[in-house]
Image 1 (cartoon, one colour):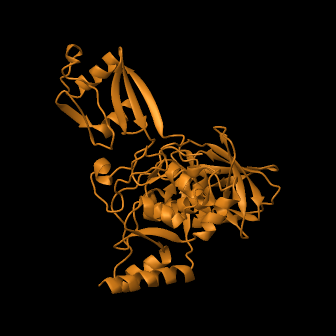
Image 2 (cartoon, rainbow, N blue to C red):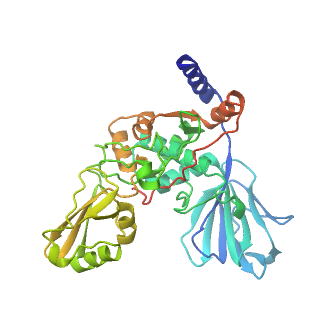
Image 3 (cartoon, rainbow, N blue to C red):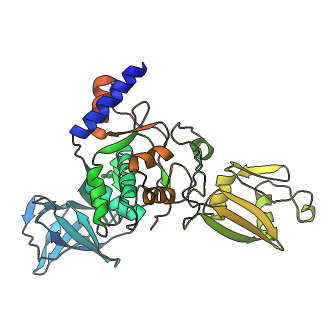
Amino acid sequence: MQNNLINILFFLIFYSTTCAFSQRVKVRILSSREIQSVVFTTVNGEYDVIADSTIIKFDISDIMQIRVNGEKLAIRCLDGEIGNYSTIKLVAKVEKSSFKIKSASPELKPRTYDDNLIITQKDKKLLIVNDVELENYVAGVVESEGGYRAAPEFYKTQAVLCRTWALFNFDKHLAEGFQLCDDVHCQAYHDKCLKNPAIIEAAKITEGLVIADTAMTLITATFHSNCGGQTVNSEDLWGRARSYLQSVNDTFCTYERCAYWEKKIALDTFLNYLHANGFRIGKNSWGKDSVIFSQPQRMVWFRAGGDSMQLKKMRTDLKLKSTFFSVSRAGNEIVLKGRGYGHGVGLCQEGAMRMAKLGYKYQEIIKYYYKNTNIVSMKALNFFNTNITAAPVVKDSLQAVPVEKPVE
């Protein structure tokens, strides 16, 4: 059995290195804003503008505005109004084409994207979709999620994570006419990669690579900003255990920017909060039923005076950076001294950045945070599940939660 598994893994590694994986993804951009009007221009390459079935001449020097006009989309260029249409597509005629889009209502900073653009109308607002090559999308996400000042091995790590997460969640918005959005609901995607060519190179080097568990299914490649020295078991936060999302003692992130935090709350306010959640502790019983709480290692429950509540609820209610905190009293104030930033499950970005600086390879970083996993190409994974197990590619059913705060 063991020899058979070794042979399968050897085949997958060989297949991964010899077969490319090509994929496109439809990403709704500017998804958190109610856009009424945009202006776009060509940055590189050549484009056709297809309005319903009409092809409109569009040169690299042209500027085109699209706005909501009743139930239609109105197009205007420098020469004047062109017409009203239902669907407008900006289609690249050559490789490595990119465009710039700027929301004119409301007025926002311009953004630059690769490949194609599709604009329709929904509820009298523009629904704007970037139809983009997966690897171009991955590079844009890596820069948006991980900043542009890290070491190359971190970018390779983040590229594999972002690709795995995207393919895991490929049908997340399918009923809405696109696959992913550009906000924290999915993964941050605020531009094409513009600031660091090493990110584009990292996406190219790891092209098609994803993370799979021992059953050869895509994992939930969740990550966060800083774990404060210890990551969280998935079952402690989301109620489902995963062999690859188990707590890891992380010595790499403890001196990084987001490793520690502090928040002070008035004593009365804190006690009132506890009372509202069923705690019976009172002001006059401080010495007997103290709310002092120490968390040297990750815990699940906050306990005081014989009562308890989940730390994840406290984090949400009190708007805390993490669940990894201890409680003390200073006069008429409660002091929460915390560690880390984010939900704490999976890869710790600042820890991974530190590992990359110290010379660890991306494969080592991934396996440090995700135990019992394999790095294979998506094409190999498809082949494995179709031809070896005679079953379609499957994925872990635990919902992925992306990073809660980009690291720069």
